[in-house]
Image (cartoon, rainbow, N blue to C red; front, side, top):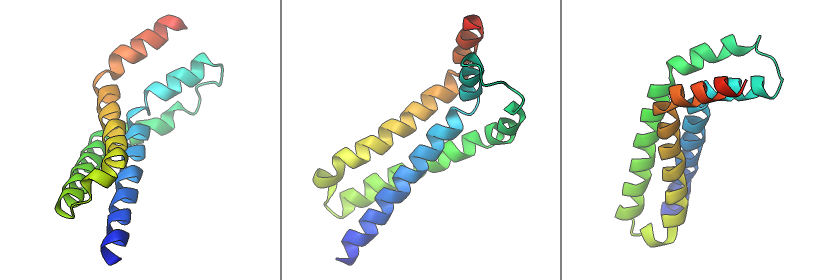
Length: 113
């Protein structure tokens, strides 16, 4: 039972880190999208500090997702948790894709203005 609770904590931590990584990755794209929707841009300066930490958050998230896969494998619960772990992996990979293509996405959004 304790093993099950510990695994649920790893899964929760993995999802939290993946959501954080996705949020940090979109910190520069999301404001441009909001401006396109007419929400103004005076609050954009808030995202500068978040953008500075984006690679650290993404790296920590990637490590936590990898540790979750490893723990699930070691506890022989990989077959049961593969869909949950695949979800966290997908979100983290999507965050990396957004960060590496941030300039292209922003250029596209600026063209739409």
